[in-house]
Image (cartoon, rainbow, N blue to C red; front, side, top):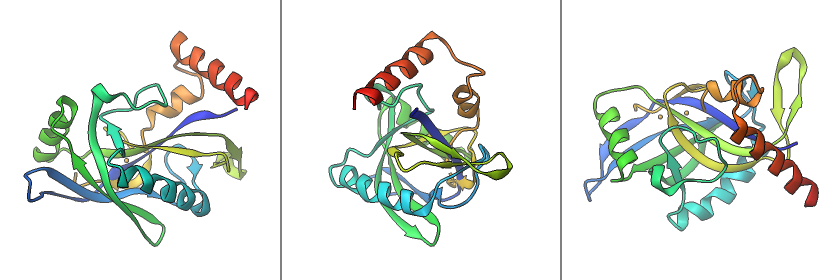
Length: 197
């Protein structure tokens, strides 16, 4: 069964303004092959494939993300805070340049970053996981990247952008320890859609 998969890391990067006065942050978005705080590992080949597909959204200026993770796989435009401008690989690290947008959520994000608050950047995607030894899991071949959101509690080690990474509390929801009726309905709909495809 495909689940909403969230991976967070602190976004340790640089904050600056570009020529148009927009706030720009740069840092590590995700790390391949390393266990995160959720005990999940993203293989390099899967992340490379998804990063390549994501570059289309970047070129179209549609690589949007939200402030905090929603319970949905859909990007909610009224909560959008930023747009990813560029991504590239630095060894096992997927590094990105992110533009903070002048939206209500973007303004909150900008002020938090300006105040020196250490935030995380967190990937959001759909897919399954495969168990590994030691209680770890690996993301399956069916993983599809949705994008990256800013969160307060990342799961990827070192994914803070000075001020940006995947949140730990989403693991609880994925394990079913905390979930409401909406979450359960979404899971059922995903299962039905997956079976139809």
